[in-house]
Length: 425
Image 1 (cartoon, one colour):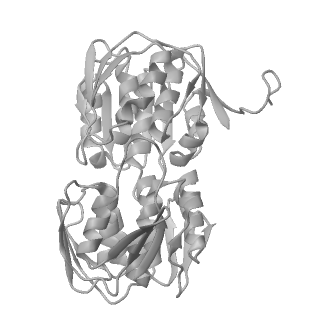
Image 2 (spheres, rainbow, N blue to C red; image 1 turned 180 degrees about the vertical axis):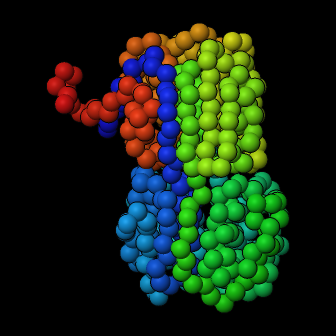
Image 3 (tube, rainbow, N blue to C red; image 1 turned 120 degrees about the horizontal axis):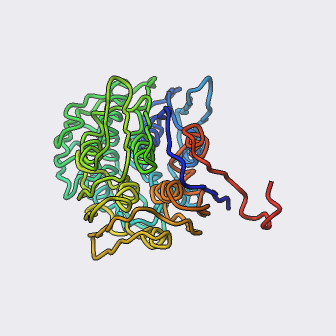
């Protein structure tokens, strides 16, 4: 397992290019299963999760390749219907092939998902919605078996605006007979991005990005060419890193309209925020101000930015309160941050963050993708050299994380943990 060695004390300055969104690209790759032929996706990030999803598609019979900066997915007329455990266990998003497989083949056998340990994230909402569309579900030795003689349109009200459930139901509904209505649907920009690609494939969809999505099923879809929406989480991670280090960072390609509340909170914390067509800039001189925030489904504050924001506020002048309403185990990384001298107390889904002037380097380990990025940010401001294990989690969500930070002026080095001390290249 690799590790990062991060030397703190250097403000970040400059521009960083933002990739297509991880949380969209994975679902767009799954959506390609809905049409025979070659679908092309541009701005796909070169990250571990994309590689895993590519292998899932290959096991289903597709050919997946990067060509001239774009991903091409060649889908055969006859696709397999089983997503195996050895791949699905690596990434929870693999469950998203369930809807497309049912739409194309009328059956799916998908291993129960794994991924980051940040909460239970049950798939009950996916299955209840599919059952309303005529799907029969059973379980067999860790696999979920789903069958339908023909998907039927239905009105489905989600108990919670689950992104994954909305996406699975949306992809199942585009080839279902009749009209499907999804109420209390997720509103994330990635949902609208998926709907845009499905419409380019010939789907009839209205209301994507609002709480009610209506889908009129069609007999078939065709392949499409699509540009993945910019990654708002990647952009905000670099912007928060710049603020934490008292620097000045511009995220090129980022969309400010997808980061409204995040940028408002950074402004409340004392940051200078500037945004225009194709860029967002955040700068901070001196300690941030204390700010309270609450994670909620979009357009609320993203849970995927909670750890990064907590690092920034651990340096604030004053006491902040973070409330986590999406994943019950998001605070697991706090113990690692405490090792670096942060003053944070958690109780249930609340965290009280008493800001301090600085942090201290310490050996820490990443428990998930976003916490790993947050610990790197902590290392960038800490006194000394911080060793961060669990880099494989960061690889799942960020392309060339250390390279992009280095361009901004960070002193960060990746090393092989297996090499004995003093003998590393």
